[in-house]
Image (cartoon, helix red, strand yellow):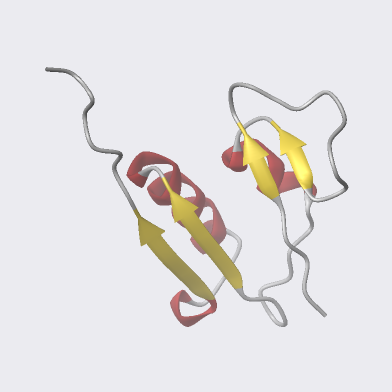
Length: 79
C-alpha cells in the first residue's frame, strides 16, 4: 500500500492526476493524516522544505528511521 503525491508549489497542470497536488508539502502533510506507528515518509526536494516537514513529523512523534530525506539544490542557470 503506497500513496504517492507530487506537490507543485508554482505552476500547475490544468487537469491534474489524483497524485498531483497544488501547494506546499509543509501544508499538505498536515492534511494527509500520516501515522507514526505505521507509515514511512519519503521527502525529496528543497532543503528548507525538507527541514520544515521533518521538524513537523518529529513533533508528531515520528521516529527518525521512518522519515527518508533527500535534499537537492538546483544548479544556478545564471551566467
